[in-house]
Structures are given as structure tokens and as C-alpha cells.
Length: 337
Image (cartoon, rainbow, N blue to C red; front, side):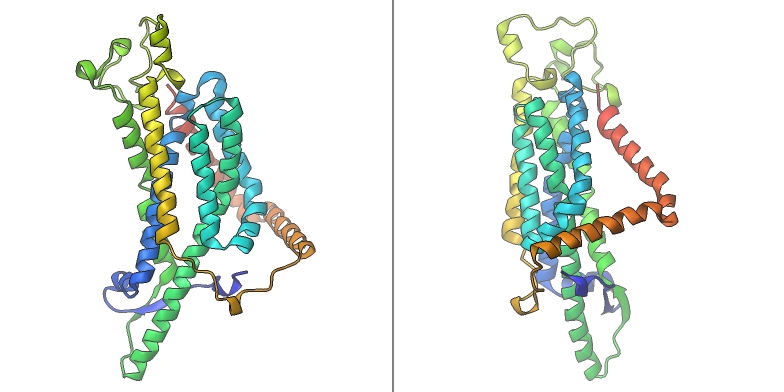
């Protein structure tokens, strides 16, 4: 429904092209930075929790099974849910709905079990694809607005005899700003986990982990895991004090509270600070009927399946597999203790 926006965006810029591009419109800069901060907060929580799933929910492979369900559900959601959500709701409301799915997932993780983690992971996968699709569409819309404003400004400059400066691609700059901010989420998520779970008593090592070096790191680092030969908790009070994965219950719920609070703030930033960029009523495309929407979905599916036999796409398959294996190792094996 946004075909007129799917094109390269360039603006005229002077020597400080990148700064001028963002500062030319405070509203555009605010929306882009607010969008970036909202995603940063949400994925600080998600990446922090995802990296701990194989450790906290290690019994029966619950954590890794949940991660597998999440990414398995992303595939059909990308083909079916994302286009419908963007057509019906627009970019901002689609992102809000997707973020609410993440918050529900965090809430279900407070009581981890097969009845909560698996449905929550499926919901997360179904919401994740529309969330990222909405982000892409919203950023394209921002770039289109910046392009239009820059074109009007450039026309005024030319009328005054100013030839302007060189052209700068708008969309890559906007995506560059967004991902520069958002990709730091791994740092903040793991930092929250470390500061919450590390045991500072007795020089950094508790009685139950006395045999673990305070300087251990990597896949062996888990201050809450009992060391070899350590006595297991025997009294009812000790058992009740343990949460999922053998973590102290207080620390587990403190960690989850931090993640949930960060996710809620992310939703609030999206709701209050990010403006809707939907086209005006007189420019909105006519809503397709149910039969036409089904035909469009089948056509998208046909085009997606056609990519499976495209030689250019087949050359990218090894890179895709490598990226998937790397992410599976970092989230499922490297962090498992």
C-alpha cells in the first residue's frame, strides 16, 4: 500500500551532509531517535533474557526449545501477518502491537514452564516479524518526508541562485542511525544480567559457589550455579529461596522486573514520542476486499517460494546458514552453563 515510498531517497546537502540531514527537521530527528531508543530498550530486555534461556530454563531443554519456536514462528508471520498488519493498522500501531507481544512474553517468563514459555515464544515470533516490518516501513516514510522537505528547500535555494551541494542518500543514513543505536542492546542487556546476578558477598563468591573462580568467564561463568562437590540445598527455606535454573529467587525476579520495566518504557516511548506517518485520508489506497487480500497473500507466497530457485538467492544460503548457526551458538550453547 506504500508503493510510492519504495524508491531511493536523496537530498541536497552541503559539507556537513549527515548532520544537516537530521537537523534540517527537528520533528524528523525526534521521531527517528525516539524510534531507535524504543527498539533499543525493548531489545535490551529481549537479548538479555534470550541469552539466559538455555541456562535459566535448562531442564528438559525448555529454554532452547522456546528459542526454536520463536524463530520458527517468524517465518509464517513474515509472509502472512506482517502485510495484513501494515495494511490494516499502519506502521506505528503495528509496532505497538508487536511490542505488546514482547511484554506478554516477559510476563509469561516470570513463571517458566512448558505451558508458558512455548506459547509465549510462539506469540513472540508472530509479533516479531510485524514489529521489524513496521520499523522498516516507518523509516522509509520518514525518509520520504525528509526527501520532500529537502526537495522543497532545494527548489527555494535554486530560485535564489544557489546551486546547492552534493546529493546524500537519505534512507541509508536513517537506517545507519537506527542500527548504530539498536545494536548496542547486547551490551546493555548483558550488563543488566551481570549486575543483577553477580554475587558480591564474600569477595564475589557465595557459599554455594565457593569452587568457582571470581574471574571465570565465557560459558563457564554462572555465579548462581553450584560448584562440583558443593552441598545441595536441603532445608525447605533453602529450596523455596531458589528460582528457575537454581538462581536465587530474589535475583531472578529482580532481573525479570528490570527487563519488564525496560520493555514497558519502550512501549511508552513508542506511544508518546513516535508520531504516526500514515498517508493522509485522501492519499490512502482503497482497502482490498477479502478475496483480493487472499489473492495478494498467495501471490506474495508464490514470489517468496520462487526465490528458492533463484541462483542469486542460492548463493546467499551459506551466509544465511552461517548467521543462524552463529546466533544459535551464542544464545544456546555459549551462554549455557
